[in-house]
Amino acid sequence: MAVREIRVGNVIFGGAGVVLIAGPCSVENEEMTMLTAETVVKNGAGMLRGGSWKPRTSPYSFQGLGVEALKILRKASNEYSIPVVTEVMSIRQIEIASEYVDMLQVGARNMHNFSLLSEIGRSRMPVLLKRGFMATVEEWLLAAEYILKEGNESVVLCERGIRTFETWTRATLDISAVPLARNSLGLPVIVDPCHAAGRRDLILPLSLAAIGAGADGIMIEVHPDPDKALSDGGQSLSLEEFVLFAETIGAAPQSPCRLNEKNRR
Ligand code: PEP
Ligand code: MN
Image (cartoon, rainbow, N blue to C red; front, top):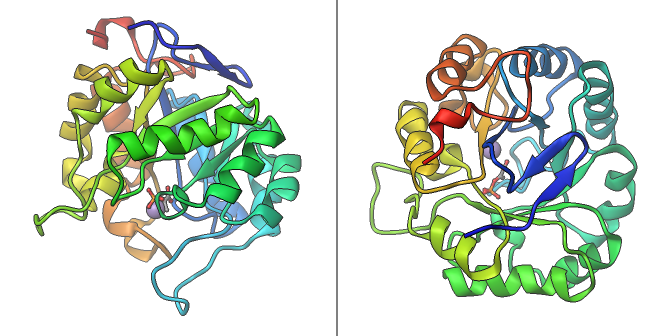
């Protein structure tokens, strides 16, 4: 099914190619963010990701650098001419984040936060709406409609795995959700294999599965030293692993934003 094309900076979701989004789970400091941005851009990423406010299970875990992270993301974005996405967890963060980033992410834990969705709908910022890990496809699509209803049509959906009885992975990637969601609302759908698997060895096979199922993009966590990451190191690729990964899935170095057409169905 043809989906709506959504432009974010120089990137188009829902066009002929598959958008590769990559970057650290959390923006930890300027150095690691710039280094990661440089590597992912040079190897075909079309968009940079990075968490500024982190929805951590424990309040004692690293919570993100907040506005300082936004400034670092903007700097990386300007330096490497790449749009950037960060997660907002509350209505209060929308305005400030919108000053620095190109796309707002609604995380899995906030997919049901209807007042946040409506407010983002009124903001007109492009949105990456992740599926809640306890949400059905229908609930996820209705969450998207909260944003659309306010007049914001720039919504990209992200399948990131749901909770099942399986314990060998952090969540279970629901591949069926990709064509189902794509065909229902006509919005682009991307896949985040990192949060689905919770382990880096599954990132490549799940990404290939996502491309095979027609995903419009893939979002990958990358860290210069995953073992020392302040969040999600176990599911992050090192810079070297990312280079190999991008090459394997057919990301074209120096021509950010699209994977080679040959990798489309
Ligand atoms: C993230 O992308 O860093 C994140 C927290 O993802 P999710 O909301 O899918 O858990
Ligand atoms: Mn993460």
